[in-house]
Amino acid sequence: AAARDAAAGVIASATRTRPGAEAALNAADGAVVPALRDMILGADSGASAAAKTHALQSLGDLALFDAGVEACLVAKVALTVLDALEAPSGDARTCPELRVAAARMLKHLAQDPRGKFIVFRRDGALQILAGLLRSRTTDLRAHAAGAFMGIAIEVQAKLPVWEAAGADLVMLLRDPSPLVAENAMYAIQNACEHPVAKRAAVQIMSEKDRALVFNMQVMVNNH
Image (cartoon, rainbow, N blue to C red; front, side, top):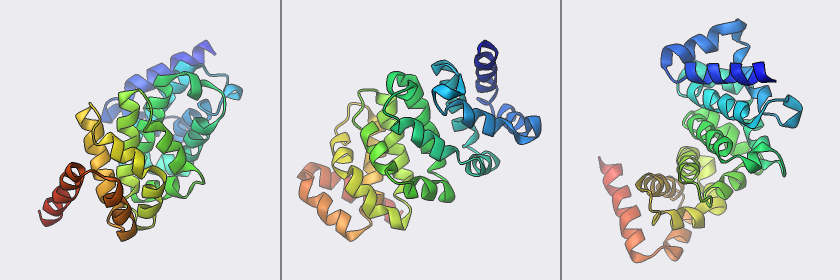
């Protein structure tokens, strides 16, 4: 277990740079991503919470470029991460750093057209992410809102995103973190390209929030 934890830390340090991430991706005949995925499965993996966090950080780094995204999609990493977040017990419930790394990984994967569709189609995924929006941890709120921003670009996901997270995203427009508020705003804008979602949003948003979100949407769309 100690060796596994140490290896996870070494890989996490390497993947912080693009050359290191590419080297990790190509190491061991492409077995690194499946190994990192298996590390976060739960108690059966034998990995510590720190090792799982390092694994998720590495996967999040790999999901920043096309080859890494492809490897994560082939290994079905997103489904494993969502399973970990949904588990009623385990490190994902007790370790804030692990949850932050998981949300970051999903946010990065949700920027890819295939990645966002896989996350969106997983039963209960939007509800899992919506729960993260209510976290006291700023980075977790920011990453979850960023994931919704990416997912809501998908046409089929716009209304489901609003239904699952609209009220929480509106609340985050007043978040003390500018990044959280910005991610929430763009997520709302993307979701509200669906007319039903926009009508629902207008009904629950304050006049100030409507002016902020939808006036900016007009400017962005005309840019």
